Length: 360
Image (cartoon, rainbow, N blue to C red):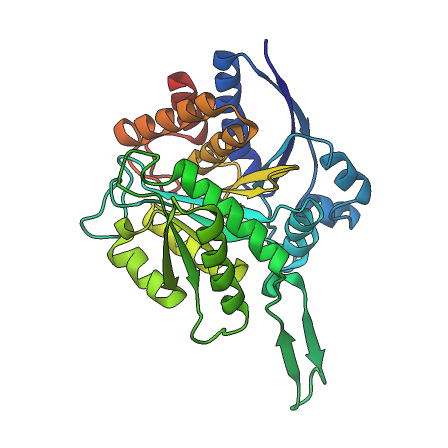
């Protein structure tokens, strides 16, 4: 047996535990095939714990999570907890405390999966968004003055340091060099596109565009560069997604365009993402929410959680195992599943997990 990886499992709320169970089923199949082991520790974090104890993320748990190899997350969100409490107290805190400054979101249409884009298929919808994950309006700068009065003023600052921008851009250039279209045998160039708004956000995206071009010229002359305004990006993601290879952008723009990308690849039941610290602990998750109305029914789609597990394996260095999981997912979506929506898959949640695990 080869390497043993310490994995923290956060099943979370609603249907999170159901999709995580299927993801772990597939991960264990990949581990057995490729002779590595997963040392799993489950953590009771999320809405139920908050309602029961008033705790969101104890400091002691944060310290423990700093010592694992990776985190596998189900979903966070509870109908009896006000919006923002769990998101800020758990998800954002983990991203900031563990310095997961890259959010990686593949936008990939699997065979057999329907897209709302006319005449587009897996060949056209196959690109990746690198979203800076530590700055921007999420950093907490700002406040409210004279709250509740007719003169109330709300300020939310878009904050970026050059160091934050540089490390994100360098990671994106490296990713484009290794995983871009040319590297995948699908085009003549590996291309990195910066998504911004230089004509309006003339301070923040001046910094992004200057460093994008300076770093590209000095360190990555082999990677082709493009620039896209964020509003134009949204249009072309719908009209001509085949134009894109790897995109890099700030936190708020990345948040928006990756959800648009998710629906073009078949919806939240398919989309997965990673919150990555290249030198530390990363966290991988399906993008869909906790879907509480489907809890316990065995109808939720686990594909996104399975793909998140493949992303985790790839980041851990188990590249062949990750490719085997991706291949198995593509075979199941292309030849077995009737649909991606909850209750319309033609199989139960656990049966989909079985189908993928068998093909790994």
